[in-house]
Image 1 (cartoon, rainbow, N blue to C red):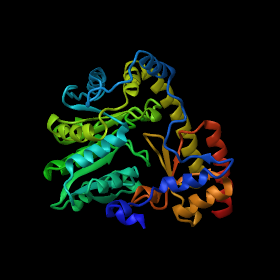
Image 2: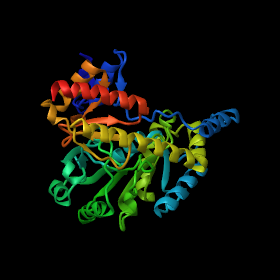
Image 3: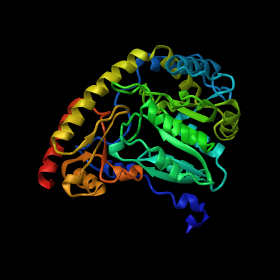
Image 4: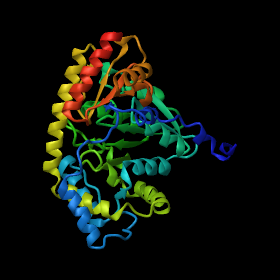
Length: 387
């Protein structure tokens, strides 16, 4: 009865394909989860201590809407050093409650009702939902494993209409682990330039790459002035619960994000901002140690799944493997459901991530090495029964 009071765009949102499975997992025992996209590492101790000390020193009040200036300054230095990007910390960077808020701000700030956002899929599950909640229309452009899950320029061109306002990309990719080459990013840039589109680039996994460079999208010539760059601390620094991220964009674009943020959030948590400052100041060795361990796990799970006869795209970033499960004769939803029921291994159906994910499942290797070994044994038994 009360549902009639809800906005139709909210009622019609598709439930999260990830959450459905983990509601089931919560009722079970002896489950090995390869599903949740969260580091299994605790936040490095120096970062924790910085947060504790900040509380002890009275950092319990609001900051400016934009966030602590010293943190914005450090983010500016970080982006300059890594990618040759210069953002003015006074006017071009805002601190947000995770990248989730940054994405909400970006979509809400740029979209008029009915305007379209092109989204290469499979992608992070929030992308389409955030566009819809902002009053826009999500236009999926499916990618395929043969193209490294990178959209072709022609496919992007074909999706452009008079209502198209933006392209939303996320690389390194959740769920595929794909990392585009500079040439692939230039193709996306040309479409944006030729059709005068904004690009929202979610780069939350930017430091978790293996053997290839991460190229920040606004570093492509001509793209900084039309890009909203999203970044944060949850994945690189194992700070998911601190809820701290940022957006960087030209001053006139950023003003729109700030206007929404000041009315809905006020400011990101002060103690988390202090911890993030320490992450950027002294966190590099911890990031490197975690990346090395993720790489060790990456090799284990990719090789293991391939040996089981589940063809697996080699992820070059983030912490996900994306095997094709068609050999079992099951679709991805059925595979994930039966694997959980029969062998107590939780994975996420690829179709939860949009068009192009059908027939695959996402396996997170942000899970301890022995757990992955045991999960592979269980998946082996499952595939032997059903393959």
